[in-house]
Amino acid sequence: MCEMRSQRDAFGQALLELGDANERVLVLDADLASSSKLDAFAAAHPERFFQMGISEQNMVGTAAGLATWGFVPFVNTFAAFASKRMTDQLRVCCAQPGLPVKVIAAYSGLLSGKTGKTHQSVQDIAILRTMPNMTVVAPADAVEAAKLVAAAAAYPGPVYCRLTRDPAPLIFCADYDFRIGKAVVIHEGRDITIITTGQMAARAMQAAKALGAEGISAHILHVATLKPLDEESIVAAAQKTGLVVTAEEHTILGGLGGAVAETLAEHAPTPVRRVGVDDTYSESAPNDDLLEKYGLTAAHIARAAQELCESREPSRR
Image 1 (tube, rainbow, N blue to C red):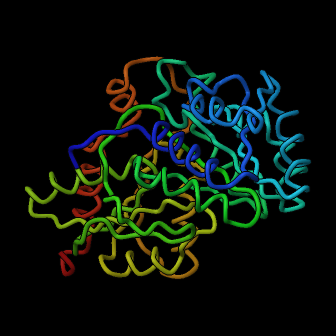
Image 2: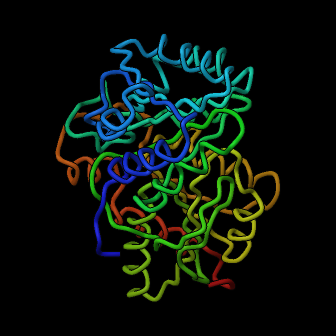
């Protein structure tokens, strides 16, 4: 887990390759192609690249119209705008009719290049997963982000692809079999389950190493697809250890932690501790400072796991 690569670089390259192979693939951009690494697609396929300017709502309506003619449109903007400024158009034009518009939601989470709270998006999962027919995916690394391109294009209906900005450790190998709707175990353990989404997977792996040094064996389940949720895998992971910590670069309200808590409350009641942004707006700062202030480091995950393990009934320790 030492090689570093950004999701936006991998996604941009994979989208170019998909465009080379499939002439029905289109890209619509809200003046952010250079930030989202879609310049190569624009240069290679100018007739299938539409620069819509800072007009996100119109971009979605246009994409929906193109989808009715059999095209596979990818619309590109930052996650903050995709999940908020475009919300009504995504709901009415895409989700309600189930049209296959694919949303590239770049710069998600806190680590958005010091853009500040207006451009950071830590509520988007909560917003999008409440829409019927909407699929929501947050890859862990560049490998999964690249594989998401073809999977999203082939998947029926609209797909929200939550991507991050900066280089991060690779979790998966090139032969990883990514499937929308399927969670994967990325670390086997017996004492406590850590359920992650997005790039928190890498921090969870670091937390597992720290916990191992303290004699705590962590089981890690990576949930790339927030909707449809792999409830069976979540229940199985919770039942294996009897304790669950969720970790997400998102508010703890309505995101992964909420989805896991809902699932376990219905199917396998289990103590759950949520690691995420605690119902607040964030600010501009270097990445490490943001992660520390809002409690999203590997150390925060490990501390939550330790505290939950200490609360276990003595007979089960």
